[in-house]
Amino acid sequence: MSSEKFQDWLKHLGEAWSNLDAESAANLFSKDVEYYESALANPCENWDKVYELWKVIPINQKEVNFDFNILATSDNLCVANWRIKRTLLPQNTKQKIDGIFVFKLNENGLCNYFKQWRTVEIY
Image 1 (tube, rainbow, N blue to C red):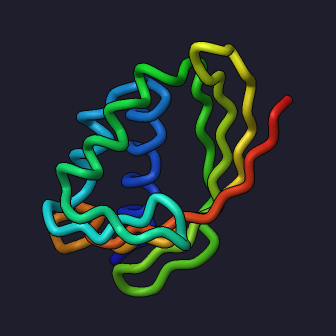
Image 2 (cartoon, rainbow, N blue to C red; image 1 turned 90 degrees about the horizontal axis):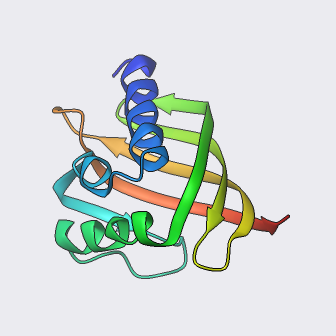
Image 3 (cartoon, rainbow, N blue to C red; image 1 turned 90 degrees about the vertical axis):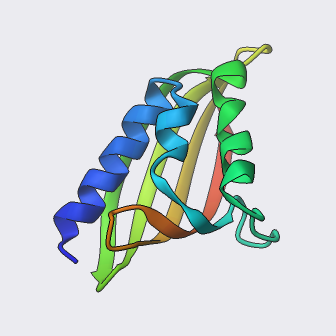
């Protein structure tokens, strides 16, 4: 798989997140995705659970600015560093997050494996 596919996928995820578009974000994942919201947590049980996670974004965030760098790719696997600045609602707390995504894309370009690590800073 070309690195452009991963670049496009991350670009679309960032646009969906920045636009607070939970449906567009969730639709980047396959129905059989193995999705770890936190690397140490159990994965979401199915796509509906992933969508539930994303549905809170428009309710609890605003002013989302997403950026990323691809660190490595191999076949259908990508490792990327991502950064986000956002404001959490309702308290209007500003956050910076620096994290790592490890994800796989299937033959249709949908993510079927997703795990993330992150650090959060309040500013």
